[in-house]
Image (cartoon, rainbow, N blue to C red):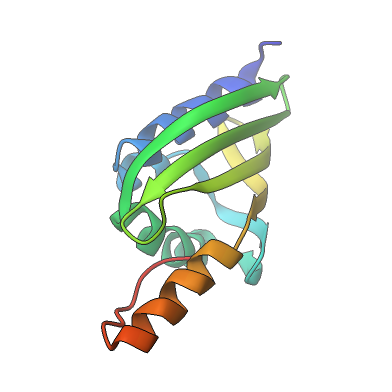
Length: 130
């Protein structure tokens, strides 16, 4: 499948996966609504605050699959972060006028929580993403 939303979703994915948060945010609408495990996020500033800790500790991201059309796209990937060795995720986005206006962001928080708990137990806790 090809389409405008898929093109935007892939460009957005390539940017953040390459560590370019500012580049990724160029594809985000100012009034984005994001449904994510931590809860509902509204606006580009809230979205940036959500994504920034993750991108700052990202080691790599491997695209698994991407599908879409002119209005909706789904991107699934697996990532490695400084905190966890395997962090699969998926994002289904709705695109209008070349920008993501709605995101359903899905990832498993359990590996991040376990890694943080282990760090706290060892006395080496730090503020990290997700």
